[in-house]
Length: 237
Image (tube, rainbow, N blue to C red; front, top):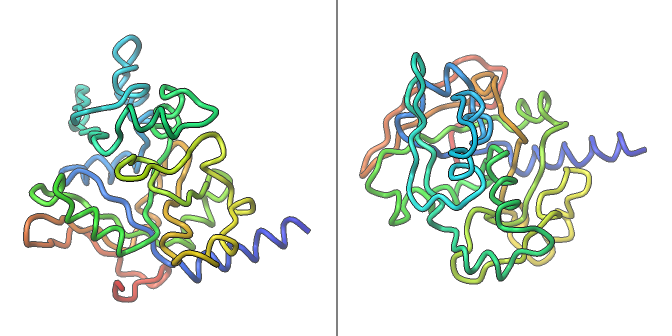
């Protein structure tokens, strides 16, 4: 019975959100194409970062971007967490310590479900003047391969700006647990489901990509585009 119910919810999820979007540093494509799309924790493993230095990357707020370096590997930028206020986080966090929350976030790969939210991020003050890489992903393809590690969230979990929503151990839920239809009664689709998350890493991200664009001030450059027909390649919304 649960299997049937999960399949029905997955079908609805794909229909409502056929594409997902990931934004990262504009110079990250060589690393992503070679190593896949890795969470911060997975990158720290790959680059051999050990304690005590590791905590400043993984278990604490990053006020500025941090560079990972390793011989024979491209340098990788871990983006800052400036939208997260330590004081606000303490006020809205339930059932977890800030260190646990940061470790939880850093162990995940995040995708936006909404083109509108993506545009808001790209034009925000912190990012509008720098080159950013936008990965457009086929939801059906990603879900088919990684469904056992997929979680959903109804908020921007990396921000405490304005009125920070309560968050904690139940912020990320499986597809079967996530109350999308209930939330949809009082919210738009993009507010009912905000984040699509994969635990750990997506090493085969190129198998699920539709296109990759480098977006900067007043420009968009196509970096890569899938030509085969096995994923949804219709024009963007």
